[in-house]
Amino acid sequence: MGKKTSRKVPQLQISERRLLLRLGDAVCNFLAVLIALRIWAFVGSRDYNLGFILVNSWWFILLEALWFMVASANDFYDLKIAADWMRSAATLFQIVIQITIVYLVIFFVSPRDALPRLFILYYAITSIILITVWRTWRPFLIGWTYQPRRAMVVGSGWAARAILEVLETEAKNEYDVVGVVSHPSTHAEIDQTVTVLRDGKLLAATAESLNASEIILAYGSEMPGDMFQGLMDAYEQGYTITPMPILYEQVTGRVPIEHVSESSWMIVLPIETNLLFNPYPMLKRLMDITLSLIGSLIFALMLPLIALAVTLDSPGPIFYRQERVGKGGRTFKILKLRTMIPEAEKVSGPQWAADNDPRITRTGKFLRKTRLDEVPQLINVLRGDMSLVGPRPERPFFVEKLSQNIPFYRTRNIIKPGVTGWAQVKYNYGNSVEDALVKLQYDLYYIRHQSIILDALIMLRTIGKMLKFAGT
Image (cartoon, rainbow, N blue to C red; front, side):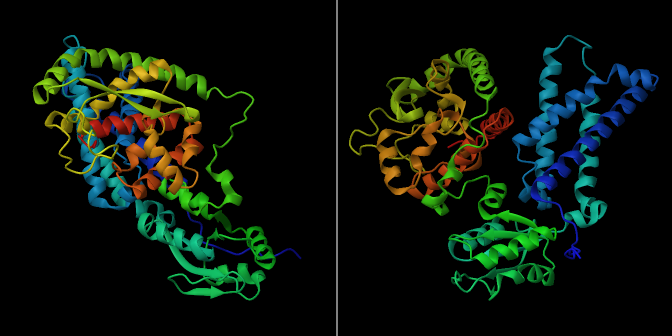
């Protein structure tokens, strides 16, 4: 007789929930375009038939693509936003307004009658209604898939504490921790009631009694043999087994670097680095060159006005160069627009900019808010010192300081630094060692998961922050 398989209520994982949100939005957008075409045909006294739809079928592709670009730039698929109806509604209106503005800009620069006048209005209203209904009624439409995953944490010490804190603060609507299980030989005090199993082989039975569907493995030290056997029994019975560092990454978009021991240092390295054929580096460099050239041309048109504002606000050079650490620890000179008074560090020496820093000029504040001060670094990208996306290059003084206080800090130098990065779109400006630790967690997540799609997402979010004056 084989082992009895536990009957558990099926529940979607985090990646599946995000995918479901995207699929639902895609269907709503498809229907919104279809309805907008119907209204357009009715108002214009046109025949609404299959031929009319096929002739205008490119609207489906265009608006779907534009929707997902703008939605991604506005974090619409962040599960914390999706779970908060007020934030979700505000973000939805923001997305639709931005799409409408893009359409209107194209409309007014296009030849007369090249684009329909009110079509985008029909689409905007319809998409808001449909997506609102979808997001509001989602719990009832998909039933059990909306319920938090019932999870049991197996472990103790820092690993268990870290994942419990993250699930409470960043995934409260996605995870319901129904119990914490430990072993007498590894039990360490944590701020939660812990079930201590004398025999680790009882793990599967404990999970069944708690009606858990997922077991989160959070051991900071070696796992006892009988607990490992119990874990294998649970796996055979259909329980999802998730290592704490993997779930930590999925929930936060960061690598838990402060919880990585010397014996598990491989977690900070990129995934799949030794592929026989990896087109990513070539595509990334092609994207760097193409977009940098386009960006440089646009910036050149803006430069006279920016240069005048910088000079009138604070006499001194328009640009400044500063030494930064790049790939492999090699130093290079970064190029930026000047946002501070001349010789801002002459007396104080190297230091991070602070909130309301008196050294920052009025024009400098605007340039930092819009991140225009970073645009001259496109020259560094074309020279090959930097990429468009990557960890922000730090000054040698701070690299030395942070390397002494933060484990694996130099790991961020295994790839080229970037004009923007995952840490820049996920975290505010940092001016302390603690901030540098969090940003390193984001940087290592990017290093481990590099892809053209992630690069595109980061650039879209960067544009979103620039338009919202959310830079620092």
